[in-house]
Length: 196
Image (cartoon, rainbow, N blue to C red; front, side, top):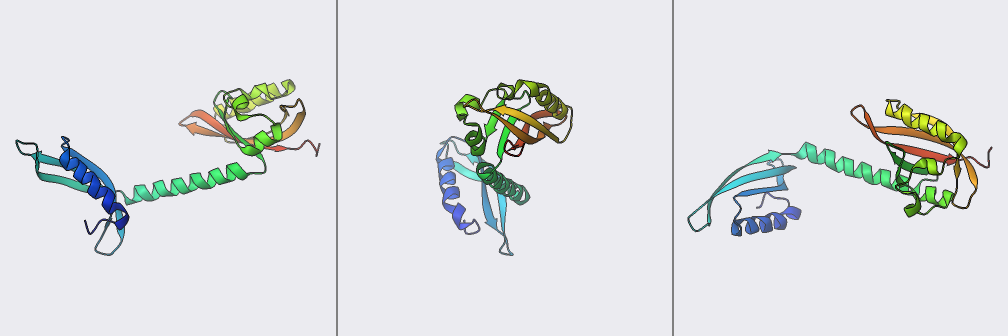
């Protein structure tokens, strides 16, 4: 236990004690382990047990797998996601995500502030519901273009707000792909009504 990182020791010890008292014969856990150099590596521990006739563990055998690189990637991804979330939440431009059919999946606070819509009135609805009718074909071309692999679309639209106004916007959208299929798109939208 001395080689296990101090922040992980009690969790590993408790999990091991629970395992020893259980009827399970396999034990899996991840933790940080100190190397001779003093550096800590992320380890995945897999073991099996041999039990006596009374069900008590008499022997355990297993392996340690170094998953440090995977953990570094996962930690980096979490930090990137947190950074993106802060940008998304505090952006001065409107931002939203649509699914591959054009339905709102998510929108940032600025979107709701500018348009006046409540999240429950927009999320799950199609964007064409707020796009001015004369721009429906533009919006459909944007979605079709991204679905067929276009990496970025820049375009102008007019959107209807909750209080009945029509605002002019400039937008930039990028698709999120799963192989050759668009699963969703991210858009940044700027209100340019005062400029036009």
